[in-house]
Length: 276
Image 1: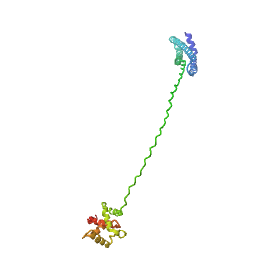
Image 2: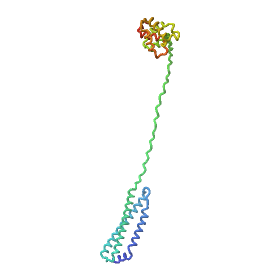
Image 3: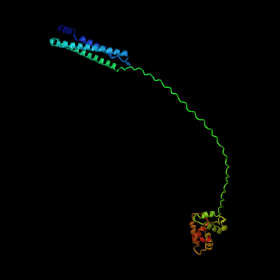
């Protein structure tokens, strides 16, 4: 036992640590960068299973070695002198490296087992069902359309249209213009009264000067007062005042028609019955 400890202490722990580190790097290069592309085939699955089994065996071996090493260290620590304390510490470092390696391999085994369990099972392609032939039924034949013969109808004789004779319009009264002038002052003026006044004026209406009454001419006003108001209307007083009042009524009209002037004189004097 003492010889084993002397061999370990004489060689040192550093070569073992360097070897472990190199192994870790090589393991990472080999296994860490390996990629799996696509689905696993039967051959690939077998390779993974074999690799997992070998790794599992390696893990068991490392665990056994670690257990043996721990047992040796425990016995050596009880029998060792203070001079061998440094060698025991180096053995602890080696044990730690082995445990770390063991954990890595165990994780790798789990990863490979997961890959195997996730591999899809190949299923045979389903047989295609033969498509049924669809036979279209022929459409029933349509019955031939019956010919429709239109019966000739005798045209009825057109009715004779007799044009109605247009009603004969009565000729406008020759005194209509005088009536229109009078109705500017009296909308309800009687056409019969106006016709009587026109008849009374007679020939005086043919000339433009004699058909008008000039209120600025005193001689003209005296003629109307004596000739029309006194003789025709039968007034005995107030004739001149009546004539001047009618001039005021027709103040807005420059040319005062004689028929209209006489009508207003008779109306103001209340002598309309003379012309009815």
